[in-house]
Image (cartoon, rainbow, N blue to C red; front, side, top):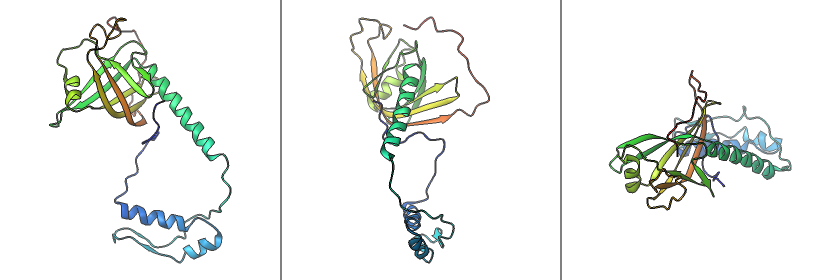
Length: 218
């Protein structure tokens, strides 16, 4: 199963100046939750952040909340995670292209395209297994991986104009047995273990539609 730990589905990012600010705001919010009597008491409290730029002076804008029994919360969350997992798994397994980013320890970076027939990326037990087809023989990506085994991957959903971004760790397999020719004769694979993933829209005025498969795909 593709790990759902870390970042989940999101369309934006909220930046918090520092942890002291966040702690003050969270504590203030907690004071607003509970009985109406607790809310009345909270309204008299002022929370002063350790940084004078961030101050929470009053809770009069906090809506009233009453504590009640939770109903099927875990079941609902599990259902949402399962749906997200199924959708992302299908997205990866049906992809005929992806883009990979790698970096040398000295800071030089590289980004390149990987393509193949639909399903050329295998997803097994949460790990993506990607063949290294014959290319330009520069080995920029594999060279970076050998020194810095981390990568970023992007899968585009051309029909729905969105992208799946993943970051994680890489393990090279440069002497694999390839009796079925799934690497195009190179015998090289690399395994990608995702640690974080984000789905976001492609805010572009253009769209793409499939025209024809590459005649060079293994």
